[in-house]
Amino acid sequence: MVDEGLVRTGYDEVALTSLSTADFSGIAQTVAGIVDGDTEGRLSVSLPSLRVDAFGVDIAAQVQKGRRTGLTFAPEAGTWRMRQVINKLIGEEDLYNAVDSAYSQGWRRVKLYFLTGLPTETDEDTLGIAAMAENCVAIGRRHLKNPSVTLSVGGFVPKPFTPFQWFGQNTEQELHRKIGLLRDALRGNRNVQFKWHDTRASVIEGTFSRGDRRLGAVIERAWRSGATFQEWSESFSFDTWTDALAAVGLGVEQYAYRHREEDECLPWDHIDAGLHKDFLWQDWTDALEEVGLPDCRWTPCYDCGACTGWGVEHVVASAVPPAGGSQGTGQDLGVGGVTPRVLAVPEVSAVPGATAVPVELGARL
Ligand code: SF4
Image 1 (cartoon, protein in one colour):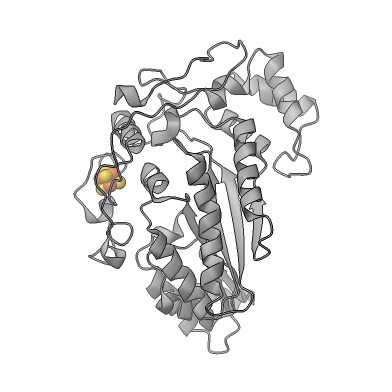
Image 2 (cartoon, helix red, strand yellow; image 1 turned 90 degrees about the vertical axis):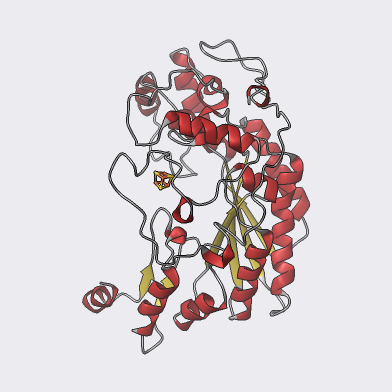
């Protein structure tokens, strides 16, 4: 398909995009198949975000056969503890090996993508992001005089049908403070280009991500007030959205910042996305206990509901997990402790449905 598409269009760029290209276990063979057909070396292959545990010298060399574009790795969290919480079981060594492979094959710049505001995140976890970026620069210096790391950080927005659908998102002020921590930590390091997503946009995104039908009136009000092209940073107007919410007696506190209880009826409960709600709740409590769940492509099924109700099953290119582990290099995935964690709920204004007291989720585990 790629060969034919290139011949018919004259393009010389191929982007392997999907929601999770990095999870495709046959990615190395696919890239090799694409670049092998490029006898003139004009082709550029880009992978939006790469599995650090599967990215080695081999695949770096394959991609590098074509023109080199940016390489993006998405460790998503700055410490192993935090990655256990989000079940992104990638070891730091996996990232460093991948970055070393990239720089050794002549790449001058790598991009790293992280999230801040994750459940139970501490300042130590946030600052771990800066430390990883700086370590990547140090690794680059083994091969280059002036390696470059572009560090992108977004505010975490909980989504329906995920274990974090009960989590009260960090406030705009808290996200802003965490971005400030990273800016301070990276100040003076000219090899790290630090970019971050507008924290106010994350809060509005969070409001609508877990909104209910009452938000229809808010969208109409915002639009009538001139809110168009809101995805464009230069057009985005936080105040227009908060004003429209307030006009109908609503607020970001009840939608974005509020922790939900297990027995709360959620606005999307009547939609069947396959995943069982009790599985998600268990996954949420596991996350708070820092229990990592190995990738079900190489374990018995956990019956989360994603496949079982639809008669589909996994077909993997490799019978063994990459790099000897289920998602990473086989680190101990044991229980990370049962310390109760308090997810502090910010002070909120008196809006219907808002919770103003801290919720000790850990205590219910
Ligand atoms: S195999 Fe399918 S149903 Fe089983 S845990 Fe994995 S995604 Fe869920």
